[in-house]
Image (cartoon, rainbow, N blue to C red):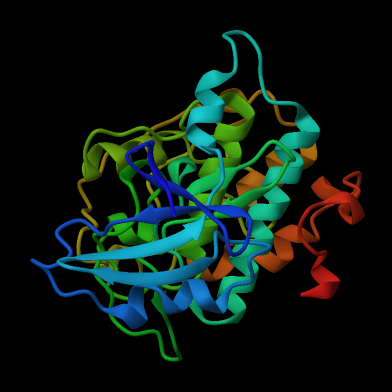
Length: 304
């Protein structure tokens, strides 16, 4: 293989398969323990349709190389490349979101949490394909859900249950992250861009619209309590002294989404994790009714 540096890693052309691959080198690969089952098996469980597949693992001298499929750009760089005053085409937003949800749903069906969804970990090509990448923080989960570290997911895409120190969490954390990415697809800007964990929480509390049991939106937002999110007040990092805010809602922050898009976004950003929409449920939301799923690069939900 011939190597050339590409975006901080290496890309190569395989003569055997006639395709381009990416060679990644885990940081400090020999100075820390590498759990092969934790970092590579979740990738192997997911079809290449939804993820950048792990093609090979090579050990050369003191370095471990993970060989992945090569895609030309990540979603963050693509969003940054869109000229000022312009936005991503609405149908492309819809297509990308649907493909991301397919990937998340497939992982969740195989009891795998990604735990680090963000635009930088979503790779795209020039044919409208988007794939999940970087499963370095992915973990297999079971029932009951075991205790995990809460130092996961880049701050801006981290679910409130993780920010509040919940020792146990599950698939809803990936759905929350996907919801924040959904908003960013539409606006080109991070939805909640805090500079610390407490600032991130306050940004969510300030703008997140809670819902009553009847489904009606109250006039104020407010910090979540046990009424809207049972047992939230018992989470390790929840404080009764958290301030309460009024005004603001998702529609004022994400103006490029229609009524169905805003409804789906609200369901993905529901406070109470068990009430948060699942990836599979999200794929059947009316927001996607006008999306021709037969033309998508990935299989439809019925083929999973």
